[in-house]
Amino acid sequence: MEFNIIPDEDALSKCAWCQNHISDDMEVFGVGTKLKPDVDLSEYESHCIQISLVSEEKPIYMMVTAQGSEAKKEGKDGLFLLCSIECSKKLKNVLAKEISIGKMFGTVHFE
Image 1 (cartoon, rainbow, N blue to C red):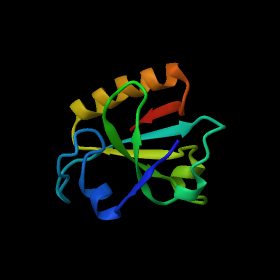
Image 2: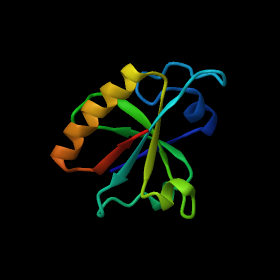
Image 3: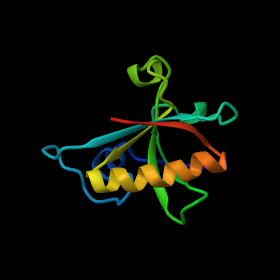
Image 4: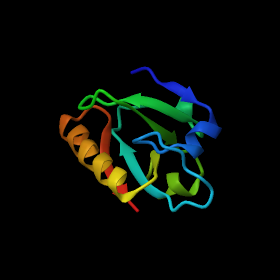
């Protein structure tokens, strides 16, 4: 799989699902994910990447957690920032499909 690194500014200011702007005063929703053991994103640690999902024709942004980070200690390999509960639900449904296909994700944690 090939991934494109997204500038941090874009990653932290756009919803992973709909790409709408996220401002500093907005409530943000987070989704953490555990990757399958055979998926190695170590070269992208602490960066945001654009990924293409198998079940959707839509690229999304995912932050790759860094070794030693709190998120990594909690078992999260990737994080998604979302602007609304609606976007969170849409992503949850798509990630459930992705898990059943078995390509990249092992589990998903909604917060």
